[in-house]
Image 1 (spheres, rainbow, N blue to C red):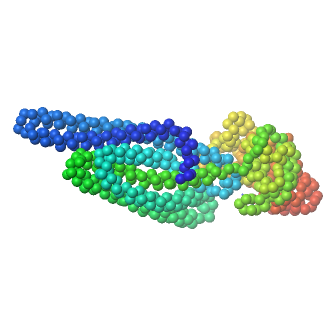
Image 2: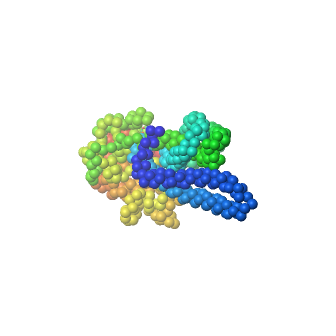
Image 3: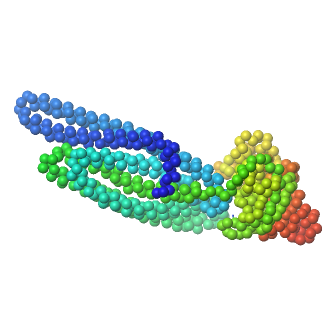
Length: 593
Ligand SMILES: Nc1ncnc2c1ncn2[C@@H]1O[C@H](COP(=O)(O)OP(=O)(O)OP(=O)(O)O)[C@@H](O)[C@H]1O
């Protein structure tokens, strides 16, 4: 329950909806209760007037009595109708305040979670799968919304109704009220027991649902691999297993739910029997009228639905508490990538790695070891190395997706940690190894959020990435849609578009992480030559496992198992006659073959 405290800030923000909602709930319940009293008056009136009516039997006054009697009944009938109408109007207003409030909070909560997700470091997204992230922002927020909307509304309604009805009942007959409410402790106990079971089972369902979403999301992201390996049946049988588990857990919950309503109806029925039995004796004793008994039956029936909803409400509150707990777990995660000084200024692009060590927290792999490198502003450095030698790790550190485990990275002589993270990243052009493009037009993929970027710059970036001709060949040119709603680019085209996106931002430091692997050597040369021109006076770090990409750089650094084994220009490294030369010759032969 503690988890729900987090929502108080939103309740405070929308306090007027809540206050008005409470007032409307009280008014609507008053209009709901008054008809029961009108029924009592009407019934007692009928019984009393009947005696008078028969008293005047055979006289001319009987018709007069009948007219007064009929008129009074009609008046009561009309009053009950007006009350029902007023109750309806106020119920409408209750929904217009409480449910509207819950929708506002749902909107705010989703936005807050989404923007919080975005502040979290890359390591967080490695630890948690996409299905889980999605479930917390959709399923869990929905559960919380139901608590803040319908559950709060029914809960408030129950409290107000209970208070009003019981005070009326006591004012009529304390004895009868005592008997009518006798089954209540049993009811509360059963509600509590059943709800604890509901809570446990719904948590299991929630967890399973999250697993199911992850499975489906992964299966459809990798649909091409599944199809090409003819693994549809295997994938389906795995899905069935997950879905079967979900079904079993849901059925377990349904069984408990099925117990719930009969128990409540039984106890309410017991109350009705008690009213008639004890009330009947009271009538015989002359303490109550038949109207009172009718009124009591109406009250008890009025309580039936809210008491039944009590079970639903409590289970929903518990469900919301567990959902909010899951949401808080992520909201409490704080990024470690913070800056004390938050320096915001334009950088020249000098990079210094000083005894940098990096160990991946989740795998414990020592990806970079005592790494020292000095890159002057405007210099182009190629990082070459075998697979798993730590090249991408270097790129991640340069974009400050991670901080070094020990050692320091300095930019223009200032520790990278002192720069404002966003202001710093804005000056970096990063082309990741796994190209990711959004389902949007080519133009918007290049602009990527910088809406005021002149079209000429988009065009120039695309030309520099040697993609212009390809784009012009598409019927819609720059407006060509990509992704699920549009065309699929080839691997090389994607890489070039990703390069265009990075250079269009006019970065001070460009980090290319093995992003020329899917283009031929000729295109690679064109792009690298273009980059040489546009990156003049800016720094470029070209990561590759291909010597052809490294050749044009001012300096080449050869990595092995997280350490620098050689560095120098192409000619110097060839003269060394060691790792680089061996790599060069191997790749030359492979290319010739
Ligand atoms: N997010 C991660 N969590 C844990 N270990 C990781 C992670 N990313 C990489 N590693 C490990 O760190 C080491 C260096 O990986 P890195 O991706 O930097 O190599 P690389 O030189 O870029 O390789 P490649 O050329 O194949 O991309 C590898 O052993 C890899 O398994």
